Length: 162
Image (cartoon, rainbow, N blue to C red; front, side, top):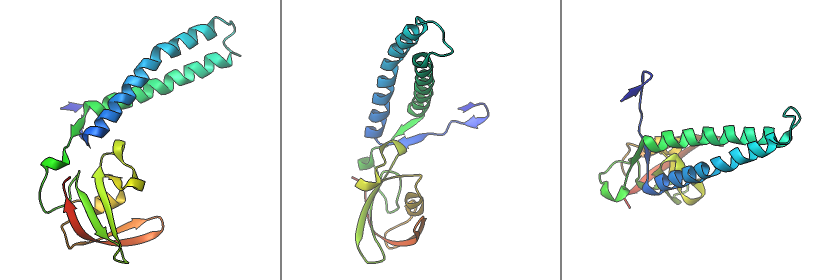
């Protein structure tokens, strides 16, 4: 499928990421009529040039429509991946990887989609520097990741599909 000469690139995500996007989309769609009501009410107050409520409602309407378009685009291109159906000896999307840092301290990360990434809880986006360094590698390989604080080196200790 192509649109405007660009390939329709799939957006990989876990089922929970897809569910979050669809819930966000439902909430924004539910907000649409409320924004229209707010615009109509503000219009009724007369002079629109100095009507802060009108301008705020129109601005919110623009934000909501942009967010809806973005979420519709992502959900239409979603490729839902169940990590438990994966296997292999290389790091791929959905894999949970245990790495050892320079101090041999184990760190565990799952490679997920943007919608479900949460670095504090060990869930990194497949587009992050760490995930990009890990993808395609095997147990025993060392990876180098350039982060704002400098270069970090990790040794891949374990790859799981959970």
